[in-house]
Image (cartoon, rainbow, N blue to C red; front, side):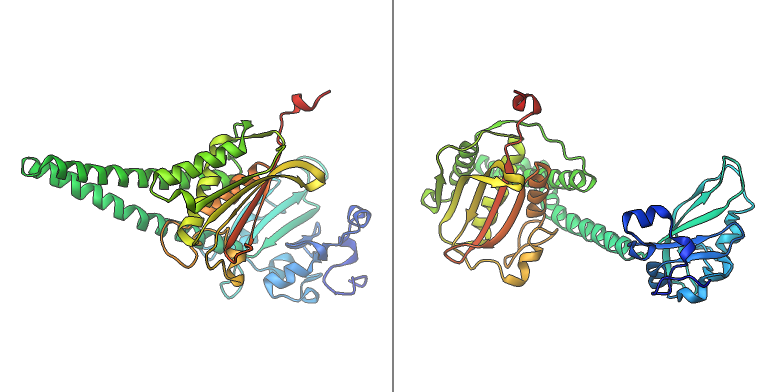
Length: 372
């Protein structure tokens, strides 16, 4: 191969006109790209492929595919001999992504596409994509951490429920009515805790899969804030700990009222649990991206605030701040709900030093209301 990009990673005949028309080059791709011709020799080996395989492009270009990219499956079988892309079934169009091994046992995710001039015709080009397994390992670690957290959070209330119910069943006549009521109230509270955890898990599943459903209807944000503050005061928080500021002329807002209550409830709980002093909730009009009309809600406290080095992790799973307690999933769910509405949420430092969360939501009116 003589005509090669200056990086030495891609043969010139690997750069199709469509790439040139877009101003792109195979070396610009985020994943590894390997292309073999009709004889099985490598004609393209981009920079990402070199990084993933630790094979220098000059060592791969022009060589037979099975020696330039010697892959094995997890049972130790040679992959190209096993799949036989050039001599296998003529109806096959490719290989789905799977985990394979490079020499030395390094794992890589590989998928392939067989290019044929016509259905059932010979393979004239083999296009292979390579991806590292780091992202998959991170996902697996995240799932394992989620399972461990859920198991830990479930153990305590279920142990309590089991203990109290077994005690009541075995020794019902020995307890006074007040003692029975206390134990049943504890069981009821722990059952609510389990229910909330299950609801959080379902929300995470829907957010991660992009299936979070919104049932939009007109929402009075000021009334929603007052309702959530009243719930806090009924639960025992002093009324003077909260201050509500509502601007005049708020734009009409279409959103999922249950999801908005969930967002407000989580932010208020976070301010009460991790913050100190007065919690201030401000509701005001806002102009968001593309100067779209919307509503902004800011929740501030007067506590120590969030350390600068932690602000980038606030909306990740399992972040609990300086004080332990809870699952650490609430703010992750809040961000998912706000973004599902087309809004944004940020965290910063309040005027009096505490934490400040601000989310904005577009008006979100149905299309038929905007038609003149």
